[in-house]
Image (cartoon, rainbow, N blue to C red; front, side):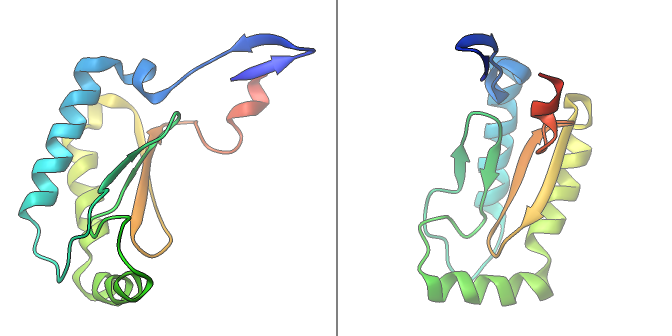
Length: 122
């Protein structure tokens, strides 16, 4: 959402960008993929839906700090997130998405160009 002097200039969301059919395709694929990976623990909230992006966590955002730390170490050797991102890039090449691995347990999925510079267009 962008405003100038109290007037709305525009509003965008990942669901509007993708459309319901592509969003559902991406969510279904992601949930299926996550159900097939073998990791030490899974703790829930695997996909966090935000206005401008999806945050995907193979271990689940509900993990404890100890489980988070353990997954970070595990992922360095097992490459769970980077392997999943590579598979998603191939599967959804038609959607114009960016995949950004960060932090200990997750990665973000958002449209190309929707980084921190997106607001500069307004």
